[in-house]
Length: 167
Image (cartoon, rainbow, N blue to C red; front, top):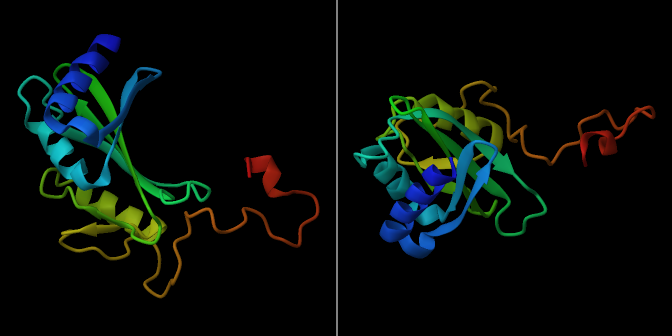
């Protein structure tokens, strides 16, 4: 698997240089942190490169690290090359004050509902999305419930506190 990490890292750094912020193995996943402004181009390259051919978007999810000033929000993408059974994880981070990132619906049709979900739960705006609106929560909601801005437990309870949940 480290061979896969090296191959992908070499290709990405040759094409995108300093835009590749980090590369590491997490268990059996090559994981890359990418600058927000090139994430669409990187994903397009990984999909269209004949050797890599990551043709399937397995999952995409929002991330919220409230203590990471200037990079509080993020998006994590998992791509899969099914014929070779290669998987890869990409992450990108950005400020909560500017929660915009390009859509990848032009690359993967399956990104449509995934991006709508992350917009709904995290408030991430996917620029260029064909129909960016809430998908699971009510339109009247004025907040994004998956952000870590709300306590897990009812504040009136004395038998539990957020420390039990890593906060």
